[in-house]
Structures are given as C-alpha cells and as structure tokens.
Amino acid sequence: KNQVEQSPQSLIILEGKNCTLQCNYTVSPFSNLRWYKQDTGRGPVSLTIMTFSENTKSNGRYTATLDADTKQSSLHITASQLSDSASYICVVSSTNTNAGKSTFGDGTTLTVKP
Amino acid sequence: GAGVSQTPSNKVTEKGKYVELRCDPISGHTALYWYRQSLGQGPEFLIYFQGTGAADDSGLPNDRFFAVRPEGSVSTLKIQRTERGDSAVYLCASSLNGGLGETQYFGPGTRLLVL
Image 1 (cartoon, rainbow over the protein chains, first blue to last red):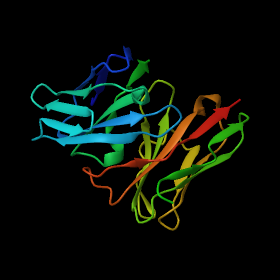
Image 2: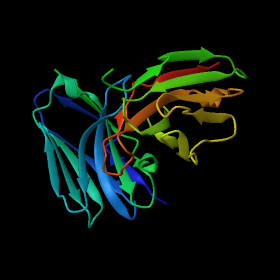
Image 3: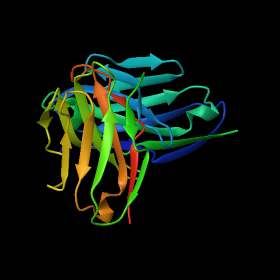
Image 4: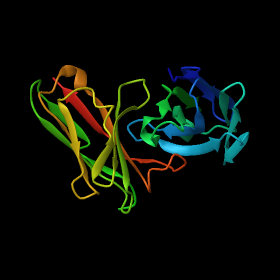
C-alpha cells in the first residue's frame, strides 16, 4: 500500500532559526513529490515539485531534497519567519494513477515563535 | 477571479439533511478535484473531473456522496442524509489539464459541521 510518513508531527522553533522536515514514502512507481504549505483555515499552496531525476529544488527560503533510492525527502526552511507557521504536507504521485489520487502525508505543523 | 473559490466557507447542518458544496475553479482549468480533510490529517481524494465527466470517483466513501460538473467549470459536491462523520473540511482544487506534473491550485475549503 502506498504510504507517506512525515516527521515530526509538530515542531516549535524560534524566529530566525532553521528547521528540517522529513518525508518518507513507499509510493511506487514514483512520478513526483511535492511539498505544500497549508496555513490555518486555507487550502494547501504548492512550494516545490521534484521528479525522479531531481535531487534538490529551492523556492526562496524553502529547499526540498529528494533521495529516490531511499525514498526520502526533506524540506529545509532557512531563517524562519512568523509567517512560516503552518502545516507542511508532503505529497507523492505515482505514474499508475491520476494526480488527485496522489498519496498525502498528514503534515508537520510548524510553529514559529518570536 | 484569480484563484479557486468555494462556497459556503462554513456550513452547519443537522444529521440527515442534504448539503451542496460549490467549487469555482480557475478559468480554463479542465481538471477539478474534490478532497476531504479531517483535523490533523492530509487531504483525502474524493473525485476527479476531466471536463464535464468524472474521470475517477473511486474516493467517494459511499452512495450518499455525489458530484457534478455539468458545464466543465463549476462543480457541486452533494451529500445526502448527512452523518456526524461527514464533518470535515472539503477542499476543491483545479489544474490546467490534469497532468501529474501540473500544479494543483486549492480553494480555501468549506468547513462542514454535522450536528
């Protein structure tokens, strides 16, 4: 069964600090992996998307990495800001199905405190 | 409109009632998705439309749930005989053509509470 596991479940950091969120998956055959940011009460917003051949992808202070061999991804947030407080969701798509049936993780809830 | 919109933003209903949730996708997007999200969990796929047709409705939990997209733009998710377990946030997303590599744009969701 395709699964996406994210860790930690929640994280609290001080403003200005860096943090790294983890995503392990068992989805096969692999198509792509996305990281979404979901603010409270809002829909998810795409941060990055990586295919099999991509090891890293940046979007401002967000950098995602992918190790397709170990089926692991990470999202690194640099110099955190209060507005980074949100849930970060890892989503893995398989070539076997449509984009909607991608496997979603349960997210990591990040709280940035002043 | 620049993004995906959903109405109502909140809906409170009583067990056994019928509800309709509306989604307005980004203009020109042929692919439309409905998801359900419970607190502390990621979105769960319900149904995928390509144009006017339901390309994949395998995520609908039972026959109380139904969705339509008659003109290939606006979609309505319909829930009959609501149950307390239906309480969740219902998210809609759209993408240009439904390709795996495309970005899905999500609406803000409809928060459904069944009393």
